[in-house]
Each structure stands twice: as structure tokens, then as C-alpha cells.
Image 1 (cartoon, rainbow, N blue to C red):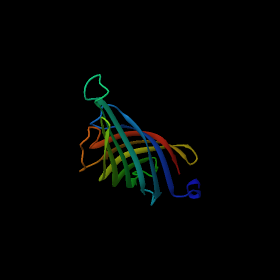
Image 2 (cartoon, rainbow, N blue to C red):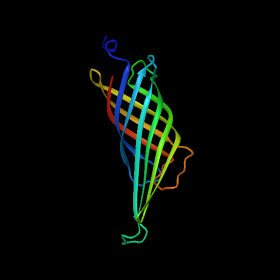
Image 3 (cartoon, helix red, strand yellow):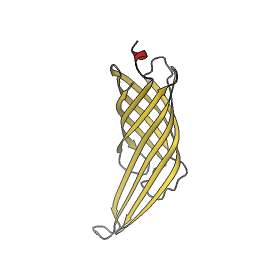
Length: 171
């Protein structure tokens, strides 16, 4: 009865811990997903993911004149399909395709160089939603983002991103 009294829309807000192969540390960012229930097995929606990596170092040790900073910001927008293999809609597999807006920033001495790129992107993942209270769920997700064929000059540019997340879902 409760499922008949709600809209067939699900909104997820998840905090991700991210790893990419070209940086030494982990990053954290927020992602959003909104999906519409097509039937008992499929949800169709849109997803937004973000990633940011910074790296600072000196060209000459102990010198402030040769500071170099590099930063990459990636904002991805996907059309996604969630597949629920069981009648209970807690477990889902996600596939998505979309476009990534990539901003590269490089600072050498007092000069800043910017590069903006749009690249195709893909995402695959698995998640599990646990009902906490009525239409509120605790969401756990594990995702792999792939960024093929874009200019990767900076060390902070990842060819792929692996992320695990914990958040809330409203149904």
C-alpha cells in the first residue's frame, strides 16, 4: 500500500570516497542521482558526479619562486539505467553513459593556464538501499567511472575513478 501512495521517483545524495591511479591520496565528493521507476526491474534516470584533484610542489626545493600547482576538476552528467535483479528493490546494478566537463588548471610562477575539455564518459556500479524509515533509505554504492580519449597532460588527470559511497535516498 505504501508503494502505491508515493511517486515513482527516487532521489539519492551520496558522499563518495574516490581513488584515481595518478594521485597519491583519496578524494571525497558528493554525487546526485534521480531515477524514475519504469517497472519492477528497471529505473531510468540522470546522475551527476564530481571529482577534484590538486597537486602542489616546488620546481626548486625550499624556494617560493618556483611553485607549481596543478588542479583537475571533473563534472560528469549521465543518463543511467538501474537494474533490480530481485523483487526487493534494495540491490541494484547501474550502467550509465554521458559527458564529462574537465577543467585543467596549471600554475607556474605567476602564470595560470586553463584547459577546458568535454569528453564522453561511462559508469558502472552496484548499490544497496536499506530502508531506514518509511520513504527514507540508507544508500551504499560502489562505482567505476571511465574517462576515455581526452587530453591528459596533467598528473592530476585520471583515466578512471573508483569510488565507494554512503548517503541517503528518498523514494
